[in-house]
Length: 305
Picture 1 (cartoon, one colour):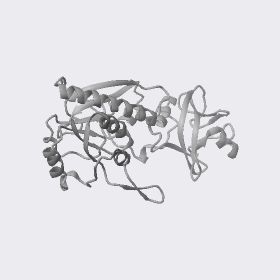
Picture 2 (cartoon, one colour; picture 1 turned 135 degrees about the vertical axis):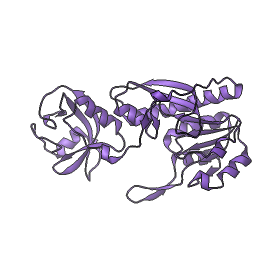
Picture 3 (tube, helix red, strand yellow; picture 1 turned 120 degrees about the vertical axis):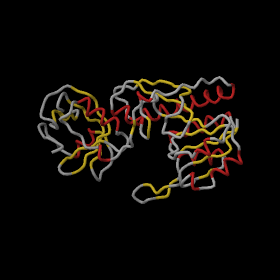
Picture 4 (cartoon, rainbow, N blue to C red; picture 1 turned 60 degrees about the vertical axis):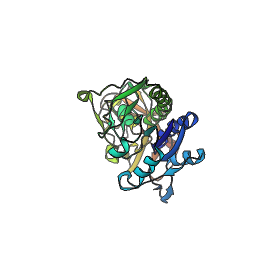
């Protein structure tokens, strides 16, 4: 099939790579290059890097509806448009171009977690199962008919970043199966049950502060769900201490109290967490053992106050 692909972050790369092996990807649409890091270096999206390696023409409109994108895609006349974490809403005139429609790969089991951050919210909420969905696109946000799904069991210590990588690969395989069935006329779309829908809003740094008065499971899920970004954090001697990885542990004490330094164990409102990986403000990310060699913390110290 002739395919126009739309996607931006690394989550979309496995889908693009897999499709390009089987189908003719005529063009890739992705977000504009953006300044990244302290030095604000102009950096291309992961999908652009992948597309250029594959020799596929790349378009980067600031806004699809305000550009000549419609004319470009109309001229290409693709059989299907595949969208994976593109970051823009497709205008209706573009949705209507391909004969097999516009198909989206979404990182949840729809209708649960429509929106921008489905993977992170599934971990934040302590879900045991998530997955990927392929769906037809329509004017609404992630509201189109479901085509296929694939489930994934979330491990108790999986971070959002780890689940993200796994679902990216799963999505890359599922889209190939969906395209094959579309071509053969073997898809059986299922309407979403809006009464079971939920919305996964974008993450922001206001969610990062750890309240150790919560249960150890709540703290653990917060750490997992916000890793690798924007990262859960607390305060230590007036400085921000980012916490990337924890494990559940037994223990009693005042919330935020250090119960042990080998391994670094912090009391919660119920139970405790072992802290594995940290980063103190202005310092490098490191495991807690290395951190404690340079920062003498004593049992009984309360952090986060």
